Structures are given as C-alpha cells and as structure tokens.
Length: 420
Ligand code: NAD
Image 1 (cartoon, rainbow, N blue to C red):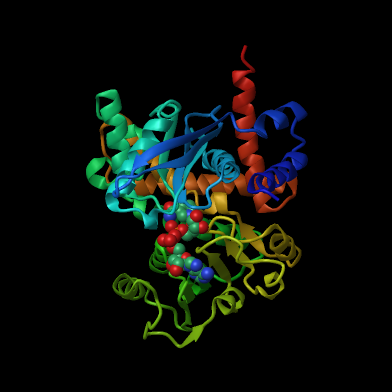
Image 2: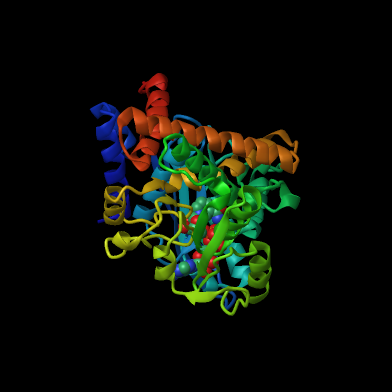
C-alpha cells in the first residue's frame, strides 16, 4: 500500500467516527496542489545532472501551507503527498494557522560536494518559487536538510524578489532570523504531552504514581530523544531508566544523568561505550522493558504485530513519526495502552517554527521565556482538546486527534465556501 493510501486510511477511520459529510471527505482527501520539477545542476566535474523535486500543498483553508523539504534518494511524489497531508492535521491540532505542505528532492546528498549541494538547493528553491511565498507556503528542514540549507533557501528567494524575506522559510540559523528555543522545541512539546497525559490519567484514576516516581524508556538519542529525556528528568523529576540509539542501549535503575549522557554523545557521536549504566540492552529490550512510560523517539515502524504484545509500558508517547504500525496499534489498544499520537506529541517543532515565522514577519524577536511559555500554552491546549474529543467520540487518542484537526479544517473549508 502506498504511504498516501495509508494516510487516507487513518483519515477515513476518523472521518467515519465523526460522520464527516461525504462532500467534505472528497475535498479533504486530495492535495490542493502538486508540483514536480526537473532541474539541471552543474556538477563539479563539468557535467550536468537533472534532479527531480516536488512541492505539495494539501489544504490551505486555515492559512499558508507549512512543511519541510527532505533530500533522499527514495523521495517520491506519493510520499511527499502523504507527508503534506499529515502536516495539515499537525498544524490544525495545535491550532496554528497553517495548512499542510511538504517538499522533497530525489537525491542522496552524501554523494554531493558542498558546492553541488548549494547549487542543487538554490535551483530547487527557485523552481518551486512559483507556488511558495511567506504568505502562501513556508518550507522548513526535514530529513537531510539543515539550517545551513534554509539559509541558502532564504537568500535565494530574497535575491530573486530583491528584498530580504525572513518569513519564507523556518529552521534558519539564529543569525538569519531563526528562533530561540527551536532546537529543544520538539522535545519540549513531548515533555508537555508526557506531563499532561499523566495528569489526565491520574484524574481518571488510571494512574496512581506521581510524575516524579515514573520510570521512563526513551528510544533514540538524537535531537528529539535528547531534549525529551533531558526536560522530562530535569523539569518533571521522572527517571529515565532506559535509553538507546542506533548503536545499542543501556539500562540504569537509578535513572540516567541525561546531561552527562548528552555530553558523552556529543563527543562520541553515539551512546555506545557509555560507562555510567547498569547494563547494556538491545533496542527490542528497551521497547519491552518494565517502565511506566515508553517514548519512541527514533524512527518509524518500531512497534509492530511482532513485538506489541511484549510492550509493558501502559503509556506510550510517540515522539517519532509513525513508530507504531497500524497492526501494533490495534494490539496495544486492546491491551489497554494509552497512546499519545505522533502528530500531537511531536508538534512542538512546527509550533516554534510558527513562532519563528511570526517573528520574521514582524522583524521583532522574542526571548526564550516567551517562546517556551507560548509553546507550553499551545501544547497543553492541544492535549486537552484531543482528550476532550476522545471522550466525545469514545475513541482512541489517535482518532481523536484526527477528529479535532479534521473538524477545524472542515469548518474553515466550509466557511470559505467552494469558489466560485
Ligand atoms: P535524529 O537523526 O537527530 O535522531 C535519531 C535518533 O534515532 C539517533 O539517536 C539514532 O541513533 C536513533 N536511531 C536510528 N535508528 C535507530 C534504531 N534502529 N534503533 C534505535 N535508535 C535508532 O532525528 P530526530 O530529529 O531526533 O527525529 C527523530 C524522530 O522524530 C523522527 O521520526 C522524526 O521524523 C521525528 N520528528 C522530529 C522533529 C524535529 O524537530 N527534529 C519534529 C517532528 C518529528
């Protein structure tokens, strides 16, 4: 099944639950715009190579399209469509005024020199300029694209239109109008959702341990995993007892000093060889270990029909995108696990991107406290909205999150009407 068909399946499940009107279902099931560009790049050896890129805008009823650009040899239009579709719901669930967009270039960037990467980036951005703009579609980093590339994107667009345009892209370096707090933003959003889910289940009588006695496992120790672990242990006082990355994992019953682990990882690139742990564990042991909360923060398809029955955590907060397969999800829900879905749990990143855009449009920059306060407020409200929908529709949190988002997007689409 294609990724886009998979995405539609999730959407249709929620649309059934909320009895979404058939006309609206048809409108929301397709992207508004799909652009494919084939463009030449001068390579260092004097040859010319033609690359293929895409930019898709799914729905823009609530505001400009927003979403990253990925560079990967397996990028397809189908994948970019699915990712743009998910961005529509992610923006809507946190209530930021964006529609969904996504872009991609079919390229393995590790095979390019710095100069080739810059020429490819600038030409791709010029090619998609016909549909992007600071009030129409705002790209950002995604897989294999960085702040440096966002700087090239911003400069390219600004050169083409003859004035500096900060709002054309987010994820820029601080010196080019990036936002304070963007690096930690996704982890901070996960931390807020983790605090909120424990409060919610405590109120319901399902959980009786206080937050500071919770034992937590985090899979993945990259940007999201590191800040998630750091903020949950420092600010909520919970113990991170298991941690892993691509090189393997560790268990420590008394809880890790996450700053120490981050310093080790900064020096050694991976956590392999970390000395201050009780024992080594495999990634599958990490997923199945005896903890209160499991936070997959690495990559997709980690919990499947093959291991879902062995998962012991009663609460799962999806920091990564798509870490649980639909089959895994079904098994976990039957077992009574409470899952905070990815596009709610990891929406902190796009939320601070929105703050970066607001700052760039106004040429006025916030301090870190302002960023954090606004992020906490939006994430808490999003969690409460989804929990409310879960009760209203008597469903799981994933379908509830879709229902909240679909309702917002459908209402905006309906209020604007079908033109002409
Ligand atoms: P990253 O590349 O910084 O880190 C990924 C981590 O996962 C690394 O520690 C890596 O070693 C680990 N990993 C890779 N393969 C693994 C495996 N087989 N088993 C265990 N660990 C493995 O990426 P990131 O930015 O932290 O993103 C992590 C996830 O969060 C992705 O699904 C991403 O799409 C999602 N996400 C990220 C952001 C963001 O702002 N960075 C926002 C939303 C969603």
